[in-house]
Image 1 (cartoon, rainbow, N blue to C red):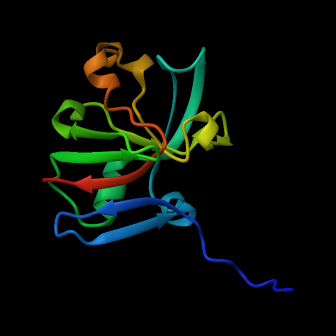
Image 2 (cartoon, rainbow, N blue to C red; image 1 turned 180 degrees about the vertical axis):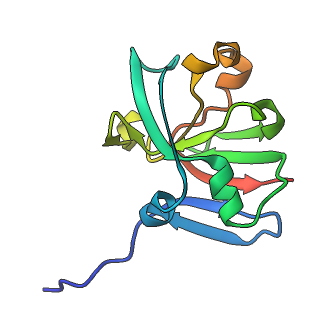
Image 3 (spheres, one colour; image 1 turned 90 degrees about the horizontal axis):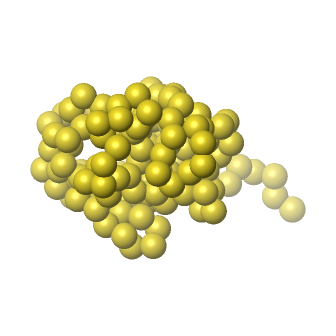
Length: 143
């Protein structure tokens, strides 16, 4: 029987512009600046509290300062090209917690790219909804 520490499970794969692949686990994501907000969403009932690292902090931690386009990939293979200029005034968050509980695959986890819709009702439109990728496992910096 072994009581040693096991390797941390990867939560997110980040592909940099030079095609370098970075794997982020729970500890790496938790060490980044966190955003916390309450919001209603089109996919949930009522208002919930969400928390996770900002997308900007994930990119900055890996020296990506001027990204403008990302491909965000979900567990089921869904892929969305995200134009970051749409979110210049509203920070994107890689939500890890809903109401202080870890997101799981059953409730849009492990990570859900999300914004505080309640604070920015002008963003509560289908063109923005398409960018809110749940079960996010991979982000590729296109440019």
